[in-house]
Length: 325
Image (cartoon, helix red, strand yellow):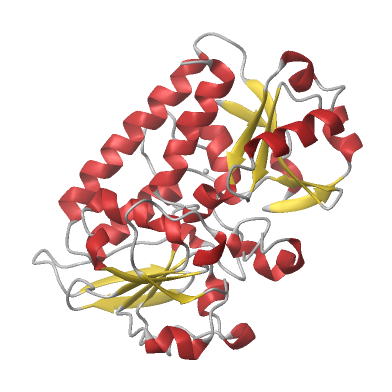
């Protein structure tokens, strides 16, 4: 995603843009959905982590980090290691955080191998395995001497986990990579608390049925897997398109109408695109309970795409919008 959807879906939606069951009351991890496991001896380094079937071993904490998506820096900020970021890709499509001054390595979501290698990262923090697959001229994990990590376990061959557990595991794995495991545990504890509090905003109300969609070029897409589902479930909502079996899929306006969602969340990409996205959804789905009740809200794709702690912030946002503070 230079993309309309998350950058990581570029292989399915490159022409659409210059576009997790949540542990709402605990942080227990399902071994079937855990993104990757970090292992390290008691003394610290070397540490080995795995993502998308690739093992990466670090003898020391990375000092030069290239981000596959700019807003991923928020997770490194939470761990106290954002100062290690020296570059990013696909920055022209993202509203970068204030004070983020690292060099743009490439404007392309799938950056050229030469550009990435010239940046000399000792960690490439990928948004999507596409960025380190060797496809479309990108570098491979081998080109990077194995020093790549794919956030969200968003892999080419396997569906990405659709629960908040993948966020917790990413934080722990990054804590291991940077030699701050205790800090990572503290961050996960805080994130877990925040998710529990967000889900509790529902109080005794029935669990709302909601849809997360994007309208692009006159077509409607249900955003239903990976982080999309994690956000909705974490906020104590039922995703009407959870059974669609894909991270996103084109659906008809009629499918949205017949699902009769109590709430609609509309993804947008352009800065300040919230109002336009909401208005488009109100027009397209005027007969839904969500439009009649005024429960149509925008959600920023750039924040979703960054993964990590952004997902918990979006859980809080969506729960507050639909259930109140």
